[in-house]
Image (tube, rainbow, N blue to C red; front, side, top):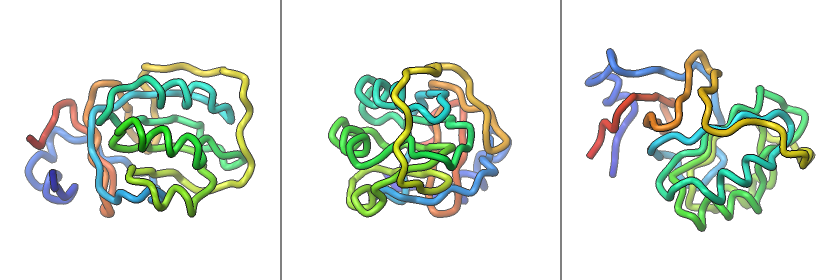
Length: 160
């Protein structure tokens, strides 16, 4: 399925939330979309791993990492899980690491930056709640569309 966020904005602007955060693409897919599953963590990726291992194929995991640049919430091991499970993508309001390996994975991966330090493994955070960053609220079950022009969110699937 091919789409352009610019075209979706032209046709559905009144239905869309436009993310104001500038993400960098780290995965092999530059364009991806799907239903949202959310995780809220801070410098701890235990719940990120749990979500990657359990959300349905085709979903996009949206991780509110509080915008921290002090450690990575995802690296090559978690990226491989996302790819192997057929997730459409991962959007992280935080950092990733192992960027050369992530670039070769058939998954969309957006983050605000990279950091070589791994996160803690305590298990604090929440899954499935509304998270807020980039000027919008992200809710599980809504649909996200991402490409080189940006990231947009709709309450329903806009492409068939």
